[in-house]
Length: 152
Image (cartoon, rainbow, N blue to C red; front, side, top):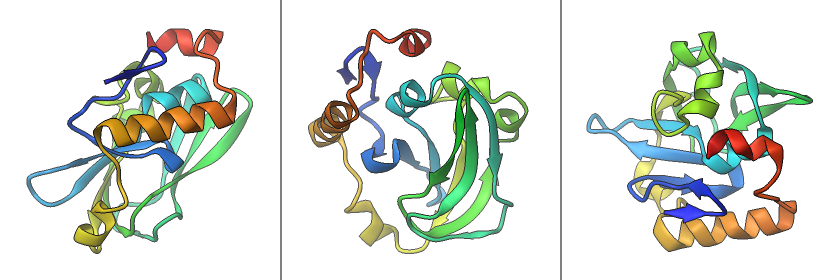
């Protein structure tokens, strides 16, 4: 799926209010990363500092800090769970998030507390695209901005 030159793979779940994607793994954990729109919004990412493995993460609370050109921001989880792993390669080379946000640039793995309930709050397909389109409209997103070029 594509929206304003940005890719949104249709096999993922999305939390547009958090600019995140989530992938359900076979071991019932979730892999979480920054969406293409999150990358476009932040621009070049210079650092990712995750919370410690084993830490309990509450819904809408930080699982780490993302530092980019002009500021830093808390990466907030859309669901509650236990942080079971962070991507050490991204900690060493944060540019991976911008280069491959849906692959090697994943950020954390989470063991969700109540996945059945939490999954209902996440979006897929056209609903996810519509929600990202609305965020882009509200944010005044310009796909021709230089910061977006790296994502094409």
